[in-house]
Image (cartoon, rainbow, N blue to C red; front, top):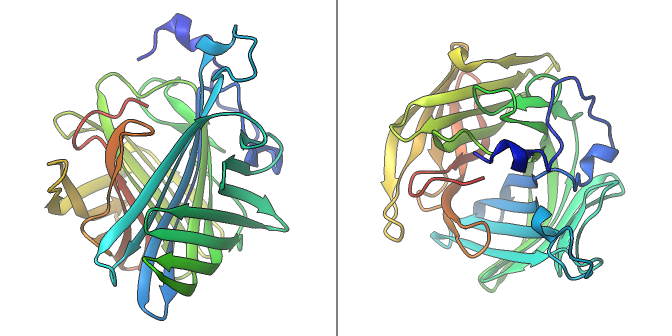
Amino acid sequence: MLATTALAQFPAVTPGRTLEFPRDRGAHPDYRIEWWYITGHLESARGPMGFQVTFFRWRNPDADANPSRFAPRQILFAHAALADPAQGRLAHDQRSARALPPLVDAAAQETDVRIDDWTLRREQGAYRTAVRGAGFALELAMTPTQPPLLEGDAGFSRKGPSPEQASYYYSEPHLAVTGRVVAGTEAREVRGVAWLDHEWSSAPLAAEAVGWDWLGLNLDDGGALMAFRIRTRDGATLWATATRRTAAGATRTFGPDAVRFRPSRRWASPRSGASYPVAMQVEVAGEQWSLEPLLDDQELDARASVGTVYWEGAVRATGARPGRGYLELTGYGERVNY
């Protein structure tokens, strides 16, 4: 964990702050780290696909005293991926750069993040992203169909046993997706459903934490489920929580005692050697879901940007309330230092 003197360089995340829109859809540059994360399932003439677009912003206070406009006070990273069973593999790419408006920037008043020609912005009522990576491209519009889902205690989301281990966090489930993807050399028109997460925080994970399992699930009946657990090195759960919204809009948040992640099948990466529980049983307050991946190999090597290798995969959920979503598995190789 960062020393107390280091943490004092960033604003504290505390309960009781009211999230305000559209302002809080934009960047919060005083905080240590922030990300905008969109994942989704797509349907095309060639069958189903999954996609991810994530932009990270990281504040570097060591550069504050440097008067140059080129000083790396804010550093941006981006990941993008396309899971395409028709291709039989995950296509992914990454970017990183110091903030240098207007080419590299995270705007403060509304979602508008870019690293050169990689963009994610909200305009005319929809999120729009354009990404061209190695062997794939995404041009998607994602229109909200539901109000934001405030995670935790009205947007204050605990990430560990200490109160300072927390983020401000909201989601936007059931985004209606239209657009176009390029897989290899083949362009396809697509439609689908997506999930947006936006978080910002100042404190890193607890020292004993190595990573997390996270699930965002768009239920077929219009409901939504977010659940995660923070793991220790021996695989035990250090912290867990979940938010469940019904199709009628009733929302409940659940604490560590109500959330269970149980691996049911693992996949070993031939590249990193990490063994990931790509099929999971997830239980929240007695309600259960069985997760199966669209592809087993959805591992992303992001060591050239955020310095880690992780599994981020499109999954289908069966159970009393089936759905489609994304499962994120970190810390199964090296510890995540976020």
